[in-house]
Image (cartoon, rainbow, N blue to C red; front, side, top):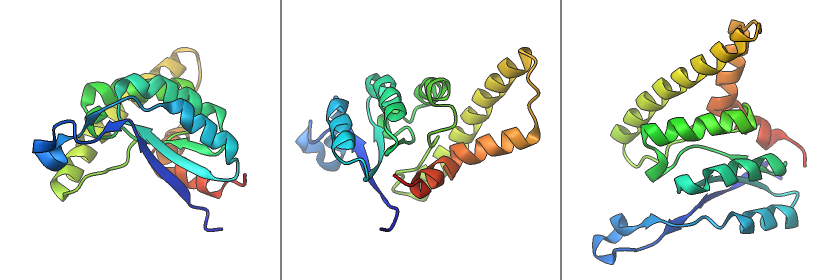
Length: 167
């Protein structure tokens, strides 16, 4: 046992426009019911997953909350746009707390990696300021330790915990 997860990227339609070769892929339905069946049938196998379509994000968050062997990560490809990242991350924070991985890069070149990290970090900062402001408005005291813990979990700690979790 290496404590590894099977990584799935769901919801892509291959070669919608074959003349574009590798650039000819597009968005499709993720069919997340099949992932639920896979998790149920294999409770000792860990699955790391993301979905390509904005339309599948709510179902993905719900599914992630139902299976101990399932971990949701990032906004991939067509969903890695600032407006979509903001919407999806806000949804995930409300539904999953800090039990997902905010962003991972599927960048093929360093320039894309740098761009994705710069815009992702800015978006996450804004989202967390809003969430902490909401908490403080209720009287909750937010400490630096709380913020460090949450950022650590969102930027990889939740995934590390997922890998170490016994099933």
